[in-house]
Image (cartoon, rainbow, N blue to C red):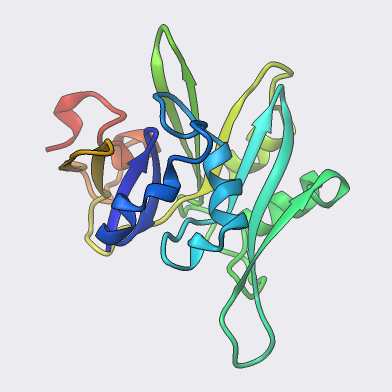
Length: 206
């Protein structure tokens, strides 16, 4: 399985999904920058069954516009992806979801549980990584003009954070990978230092 970008945003899927022409959805995801509409498209077309992405919250002007949430299904069945909007996207529910596992049990407070990605034309992408305490502060103190995407952090199977990035077009795809120099358990290092790859200083990844 690959981790890759559509419009520079990381989601997970299979190589075959990269060439699906339906991804050129009304021209709205065939561009640079942060493209939140792609998640609605994946949900509406049920492509999320092959192109998987974690819990995702789209913020616009400081408010959570839509939340794509994985929830436990019926006993013996796989988790179900649901789209929540409006009053279904409450601060308390977001905090509980990001600090708990799929069954609702609390996660170790020191675990990296979320990453928030924002973009502007002058500075490019900014990524924030957060543990449980960081998620609580982030959701409670978000700024009015904030626009970006909050996602549950997906931990790599390797000891260090590893990301495979794809620069995609209709005619070609370029793959590259970076791995954090530090491990998830490195002591005396900040969360960004332990997690950053493409989004951080070159000396912190390889």
